Length: 315
Length: 254
Image 1 (cartoon, rainbow over the protein chains, first blue to last red):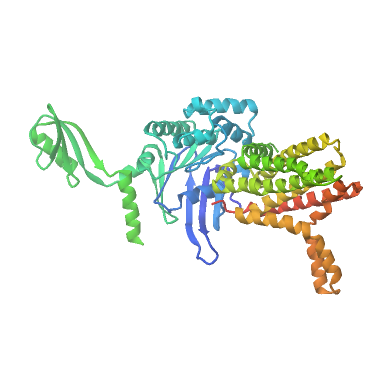
Image 2 (cartoon, rainbow over the protein chains, first blue to last red; image 1 turned 135 degrees about the horizontal axis):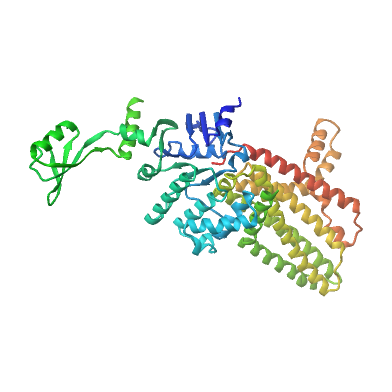
């Protein structure tokens, strides 16, 4: 049944009750890759798609792009059924470990993608210059892709994904194969895209990248959505592992452990059980001057593992 | 149309960069040149030998280009998942298939042109550059366009090895289809004869458009036969491409 609401809101991507199974051989039982997935991406956000291997991240991406078809449920891209080519006109895609015809140069790759997006020759030239510059491939623009390193192919793939000035970009493990400088450049590019209003779907195993980039994260496991969290909200949900207190001067802070000391400045750590008012009393009692008091929360990685472990216990 | 042409030109440049193409072209050239040596062993038939071997080379090596380069390129696109990147843009699946077909057909055309030029070069030296031969070459080219459509059709749902085998089988069956009419004539009228008759209608009869013998031996070629055979083979090619688009429309690209 048509869903006009999605057309009105123009949600970049909407999954409703999507189930997808794969059958490798007719005598084998089908393997369920997605099991009733509901997911919606908001305009202008960066959504991280997290999950262990086999969680269904790549299946989700392929369904979004109309490369595979759901057994049940619906997938809507830019408010249209995902299999409709026009839905993909404003979508960019960088696959995991991309492969492009390796006799093409970086520039030819961009030109080819530009032609598929219906850009004029002048626009293609302009976009190629701009994007190759952005991804740091200007010097290698006319070199065949077979002579590119893995990281350079990844950069060329990013430039290709941006050719059509997409409103929505899907990145599958975009940082794989990049050196630290490249990772930083990609992170900056992704953040800049968000500033420009582009919606980003970002699948990754590297949780630190997700932590730095994403507005929200969706945690998948065995084809199900385990959790969908705002990273701001997530901060509140992360367990407190202890308290870190920076003070100037004073004596011992009782049960706290001295972590570092530089001149008068000292860094103390209290256990998770300590209460902020008790910590403040201890500081006052020791005659120290409070500089900073912050909770030590679990990282996204720890939260991710805890979510998976809780789900396993529940099941 | 622009997207189809973009895919076609990209496919053509990929074929042109394919090493196997050059290997096959060299073999074809050697074979055409070798026909000169073969002709020395015959008396008074040397031009016929050059024409016959030359046309056979165009046929066989054209078929090999279709099988190895055509199926190979479609396979590479699937295997390396380049197709997924192409189809992640605003490209319909049928546009992708038609673009690939046009690109491969352009490559087949170039290949046929080069071999024909070589053959005519040989014949020109013997002062026997017969323009009628061009009609036979044209029909060989049409047959290759049909076989390319068959390769695209089989690749749209099958694995590359099977696609190559099915395409080769289509060539063989197509050239033997005429024998079904003989079989039908020998069978008593009834169910089996009707089944053979309908099978003949289903299978493309490629022998009908094969004008090599007529061109080599100077037998008159009817324009009507050329027109009908061209329409017949290209009609089959169109049907196969439509079926390929249908089969590919809902195929999961994993």
